[in-house]
Every structure is written in structure tokens, then in C-alpha cells.
Image (tube, rainbow, N blue to C red; front, side, top):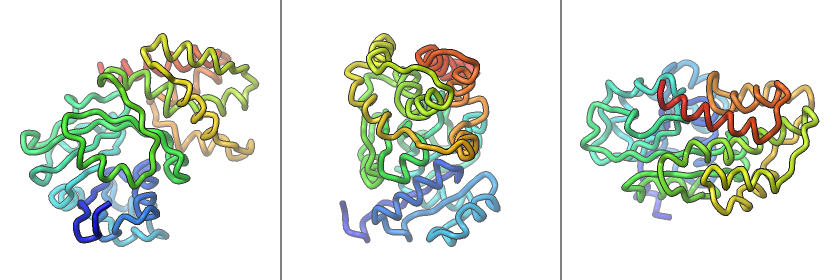
Length: 269
């Protein structure tokens, strides 16, 4: 890692549960706090979420953040993908999009020709906070992105193509949540079946990811379960599709495949 004066300026556009977890994990891992800016579609909401943290004075407007950041995490809801369209990013910046079911070609800015884009998919906020995060990324120029991502101490997974994000999202980041739901609702889970199903989705050598998922599975009391799901399920998103399918009485594999289907549907919407 570089000396403090050389670190890239990092912007986090979208201060929801995931954006907040990423911001606080960067600080916890030693990233210079003065190099981090945070913004949100609702600035007041961002300030409220961060008011008791070290980043309470780092909340700025979206335009200010985008014009000054070398690397930007874009973490709005997929339905708000066009929120960044009216803005120009710093020339040479890297835009890291965190939007599930949203390929790079759908994420547009006012100066696409002057920046690089990297698609990133991580596991749930609680795994980021405790240093157990899982991540895959795709893009042509990833050096700046990787320089920042290393601070998050993520378990990195290699994907063959951007199309693999559909299956990865369900069988990777969403898997610990799905396992917790199966435990909650008394659904039988066979690890070998998960590996075979992942393989059928084009995800090879998935055993280590399954082991990660078991270690990252949240242990929750009955009273905390619903609030946890609320924090990890974006309305209309992949995780919500998986959780709702399990709640409806379906098996784990069928539920994960429903998540893959939902990711594909989001691309078309």
C-alpha cells in the first residue's frame, strides 16, 4: 500500500447499508479518512447514517464528490441507475458499479469516454464490516479499483465473463443469507447439491465459496432476523427473490436459481 499522500481519492456515491459498510471498513483498515468522500441521493439521510462515525464530516454533494474522486463506488438501487447520468467524473477516474443485475453498458455518465468502469459485486454489508467479504469484479482497467479493494480484505473470485455475474450473485454473495433462511425455516441443505448446481450454472470449483458461505452465514435471534433481511434485501432485487422463494416453501437450489433468473430479468428492465 502507498504512503498516505499518494492514496487515491475515494468517493462512495450511495450511502445505504452497503456503501456505509464499505466506507467504514476502509477507515478501519487504515485508508486515510481525508481521502474519502461520501454522498447520497438524499444527503440528509447520508448525514444521519454517518452522524456517529468518523465520517460524519465527509458527507458532500454528488457533484463535488464525482469531480474530486479518483475511484468511485456507485451503490444506488438498480432502479436509480441513471442517477449519475447528468454528472461528469474526474478525468481518468474509475467508476466501480455495485448494482446487481446491471451490466456496465447500462451505467452511463456525462463523460464516459474519459473514465474507466469496473463492475463489482460484493457480499452483504455485515460480511464487509467483519472482514469476511466476498467479491468479484470485471472490467478492462482494474488497477485503481484493485488498489482500493485490497483495503476491504475481500475474498476475490475470478469470473470468465460479465455474464457470470448473474449466477455469481445468487450462488456467492446471497448464499450465506439463503443458508440462514433455510436454517430459520427448517429447510434441508446438502453442500454437494449446491456445488453441483453452481457447476451447472457455469461456476466451476465452487467448493471454497460454499465453505466461505457457511463461515459467513449470520447467526441471528428470531427478533433480529426480519430487521437483518430488511438491511440486505433491496426491493425487487436478487436477494429478495431468493428469500421470498425460500419463505414460500421452495428448496434452496430452486430459490438460488430464482435469484439467477431475477438477475437476468433486471438486465432487461
